[in-house]
Image (cartoon, rainbow, N blue to C red; front, side, top):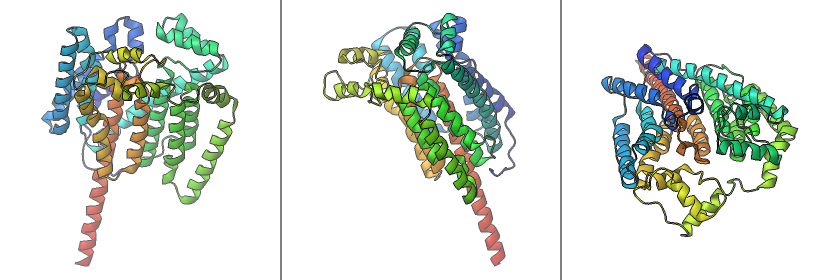
Length: 429
């Protein structure tokens, strides 16, 4: 358990941040779009408003990383320049800033130990509830051969391309779970986040969820989502990052044996064979053709990204020029480079990838570092971050949580080390 210091919780910060959590994980983009039936509802105006309020609060209290703020300003500047050079549509400016740039502000926010513990626990409870609902409906959908997905189509929750994809998979005989949360790859992502967030809490606070239960739910979740990369990353998490590593050696070995047995049994089950195995049998390429598009770019069949981007959806135009059948690049760094430009993309990935990894590495928190890398690999393996909606907000919120948990751990470990050293000096005297 983390050492409790004499800090008090920041009730204003907690309340405002909880509003952001509610509007990014409960009243999220798909649900808002279904209720209000307008494209611009994909911009999370409420989350943006409270993010700006918290930015002013953190700056006032000197609890904001100014280097992050400078990088954010540069990123926003070049994103706007790219949008201006490509189009004069006010809507595109709003979508770029609202969906991709403003969420980056969350990364620089700092809070004390008790405040992050309160926020983390609230988020954990909400996340678990969402995951349990997705899983329950997914199991019902799998058993009923797609009745839940058909219900969502009938209620017009799915529209356009999503309906085509649902019917394609249901009629093709290879099961994939399109839930109220969205695309199967987004479902797989939230199950990986579920594993990481729960195990970090177990490791640094107290065991709230049984590690075996977490592993089973994660395995089932990524399997019904039928994400090949997601399943591989889930196996890595379960084998190497299970929170039972905190237990005594004997208990750890028992847990490890049970986990391995569950994995073996699961990979020989009907649900695994009717999802992941069938999909791999139909297409052995883990990237589902996306690497072919990358090869086309490297080989010079299409223009490479420039310092300034071509505007929203320019990457889809480039995709069409290659003639390959993948629905998009599905690699956010490449898509952002075409849409927003290389400069904006580099600055963005300094914030959402390089800075967190360097921070975790400097603090020698390899557990959180490895957990973060797994999440980063997942969100980089498909085009979620480039989609309009709350994808970037949700991801940056996770980064905020991990950075502040890491900071709390580092601070308390250093405090304990100094305290022990002082006691030793006193004893010597």
